[in-house]
Image 1: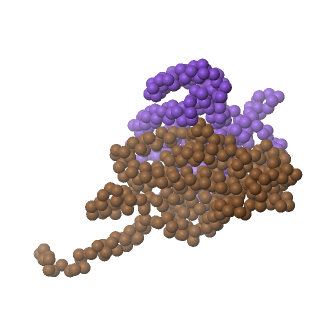
Image 2: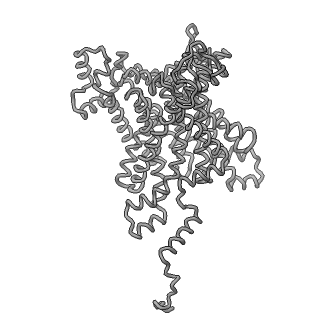
Image 3: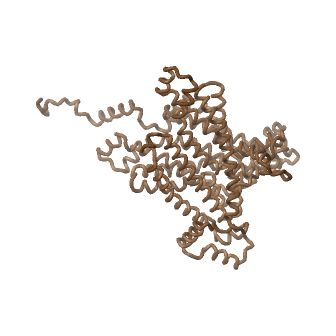
Length: 315
Length: 316
């Protein structure tokens, strides 16, 4: 068979850049490996999964209500009505009752969200960003720096997370910032491992090899090829983790290691109710139920996102 | 298998070394002058100087570390600053109490989680399956401190079935039965999370195996259902459950802290909490070291058990 002369080559067999890209995209789409954008992931999860949708709406409402608490709450967060002390659920003018100092429970729940939600959200967001950086670099440069980073994080793995956070928060002293620092430290190894594992898989993919052979540098491969592919699993993980961290941050305040009374916070409120549990169980049960619902919603939303990302993982 | 086990055991050494460095650095985390903070506001300058010398704070950091580590390796874990007794005499008995609580919670979690998880998979979408889903969803989201208060309210204050706190009654005989009576509620509160995890994982693991070709083939050959499940399915479905149970056992050591504080259970979590409040760093370090050591060993055992059950790993 004679070698084809240049003149006999049809123009279409010399794909242009645009064509090559279309072919590549079609192939990727067919294999279901196109990077899932965060926005599309949320859209898919909320459309398909009624529980995820309901949870998302509930969380949005709680966050909004907390945000506008100063304008919508019927009383001040520390405004006391001693006459109605320990009034139960349904006391006139106090939908969710009053605590032992005669403060309105609903008002304090609304204000409490302004403390409880950011106290979990900020460290989770910070840990997500830092672990994306650490995990991607560690997964991409597996031999040298990657090995070092992962072995160092293994050390933090040796402590049960709750105890490590309690020790760190306790030694640093009470306060919102120290709670957030301790949660950030404890989350870091777990989140970095998630990014690291996904990076290892993605780095083996053909499109990474293709990018490299077309002359892309390491930074460009990390940012343009790997980052979009490891972000989605990370969002799933961060959402699931938010539920745990809301409960845990409140737990630190419950123990007196976090936000201090009389600040309205869901953990502080649950702790307030401990001494009057026999007389007025609603004082600790009401904030506890709200914590349960918020944690539950983050779990269901996270499950929905995970199923939307990869239906095979559904359990 | 022997080679794998040896490698896994050797891998622990650098981790424990790192753990000791982290714990040592805890002392550096204390804000301000360490000795003054440890002694509180009424400390005299003499006393502060004495503590500085005792802790070796006047020496360079690496010297401090090696003398601290040397003491630890010889069994001298230092003295509690708040209680003025050797740390070991505080930490060891408390640790045993926590093991009792965590062990009971794990047994409860397995006793409920395994059968419900298996039944949920075998009878998918039945009422057992719904109950399992509810347990898993509720248990993993319920704040442990709230759950503990809820149990106290219902079972102790309202019904009066169980005591609200402690390990023994004031005028009790100190017998086993009395201990169990005190143990039940804290163990139940502690078991919520591992129960949720074990139920969910058992269900998904069994489901996956039940649908696989070889199980279908066994059924086609006419093997009775209980034999297919008990002899063939579970053997293949349990390794991930074992590995997660090992992890959960480790997490339980941390997860008991809220329950211990609320039920006044004299365990290591409560001790750690009190030491943290009192800035009693030697106790914090010793408690964390014990827990980390136990945690690492548990994870190792779970890994080895999984490897042993997996013939492919056993041979290699």
